[in-house]
Length: 323
Ligand code: MTE
Image 1: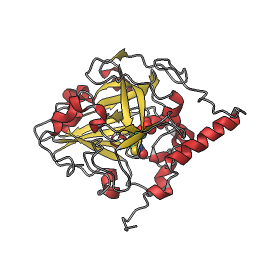
Image 2 (image 1 turned 60 degrees about the vertical axis):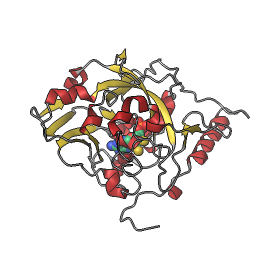
Image 3 (image 1 turned 180 degrees about the horizontal axis):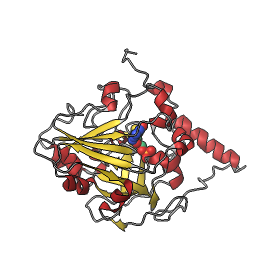
Image 4 (image 1 turned 45 degrees about the horizontal axis):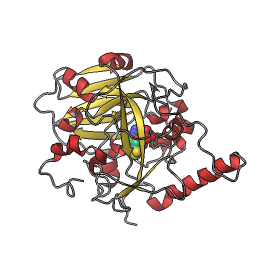
């Protein structure tokens, strides 16, 4: 292994997903006391509210591509299989540990190259634009995917409100880093705070969602409460959780994952089955919930299936070079 000067877990150190899922299946089967494998008990039918958190009413989105007609991943899987390194690097850590996250009071500072900078408290953000339900695929760089009914509105609605100047070329997202609430910050796995960024036109694209909820309720802490980004055509790590600052800048910012391993995590990180991650292929993916020995992997789609909407953003660009 080359020295990359940080402690990012290598693929070999992470429980291979197949092993994890098979272990989980086995435990479910064992818990049910049956020879056959039990279905997840807390699976919630698509459209049904789980009744665990405050309701967040919304209308079905009419933005093209915002609703995929695929079976939604169960609420149980969406909320117990997470990446949120501030609460640990194991997929089960966030659901277990994110209870310590305080989501009120909460504010998002909007600053930099805008004519109308300001601090938006979460209550005003919730009312800034009509809430929509968008059923997006989320494809993680690690090779798994989910289908999640998010609730939120297009980030463009906020961007238009703050009026970017002609110098605003990129938008940076800074997320909360508070050692008192986040046990994972004691590990140097990433440079905290977790930051991400988009080009301004990507941030303005109607599919780019500022999400406040999922499954008709406010976001569970482990999924990035009280406000996160969802960029459905990019690998999941571009979708920063628990955002506290949105900064408009002229130069392309370096993201936390680029700082950790720029040869593995590019700035664009568009879902692209033709560009392998240095340690694994991106040609296929495993849909969480379709686990088990006989579940077939799915072919990963260019731009995660959102090419009709977003490919024009990258016209003329070599996406192998700008990965
Ligand atoms: N945001 C923060 N602040 N910290 C993180 O570790 N992980 C990213 C992204 N946003 C992460 C984050 C990764 S790798 C993925 S795949 C998605 O969140 C997972 O979102 P989910 O848990 O809601 O599925």
